[in-house]
Length: 180
Image (cartoon, rainbow, N blue to C red; front, side, top):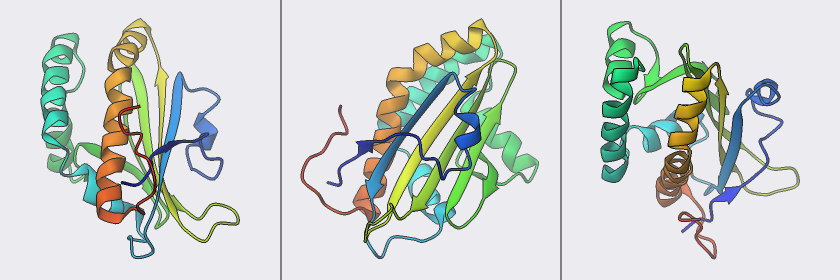
């Protein structure tokens, strides 16, 4: 399995301008095979559109918990995006896209969330890597509570989705830190 590494948020990401004001920022990377897609949207589709069963169960629990609070459920997000012809991958709205990076996001009155999938070649490296970077900016107490509640699942979900990308497109390396 490809090693999933926690890395500093990449300065070459379109999210870099958001880091200073974010309530939370994290980034994880995997090394890509040479034949992995060069297109960040294609790589994102391969990973985000078919989440693992355990993730769908957790998402259902999350949706049941947040609906009474007035937060958007995942099915409501998908339905809204599809009905309005808004570019998306799974339940994630595409905010911007280049071949190297796609930025997804959602904004509401409680928090703003952004996810970047960046394909890059690290300085001096012969290989490419895929980097998943998340930024969250909380606007109020409910946003901070929500962020704290989902954080353990967030890290596991990001690593799990990168592990799926690694199974499809990653280099096999020693070690596996999906559970860490």
